[in-house]
Image 1 (cartoon, rainbow, N blue to C red):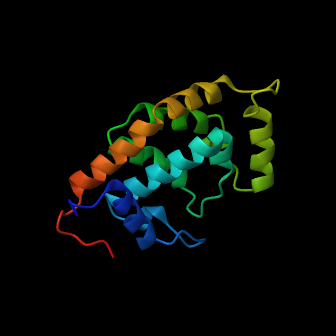
Image 2: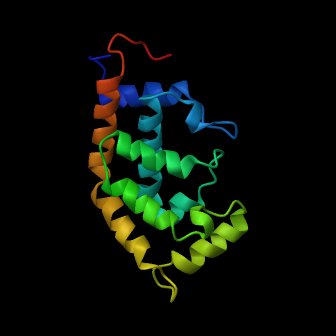
Length: 154
């Protein structure tokens, strides 16, 4: 395990779990859960911001909470706080389960050019974009520090 590059570990961990409609991040043990959750969240955010992140229809209804917790697990505090502040904008602090309702909400409050654009979205995106590289690095450090170094990922 020590001799593997970060990319090799990333590939092995993600190969171990096939993301599907039945995928449940809560049933994955640490440190793999935090590595997968942070890489997934940060990758989506890096590719399309928080609107793209919240457009994602994760099969686990607690996925956003698990992702925020995973940032904390790897030693990050500003990213989970940013995600939680944005979650608080949603009714009951959870994205709508109906994708049409969620899309309408995102169009109203997450569109930077719209009159109802919520300033918390900009605040949170600034943090998440600025801290992107350190999130990946910290997730891998957390994984390497908490995995049995003799383990073979299967």
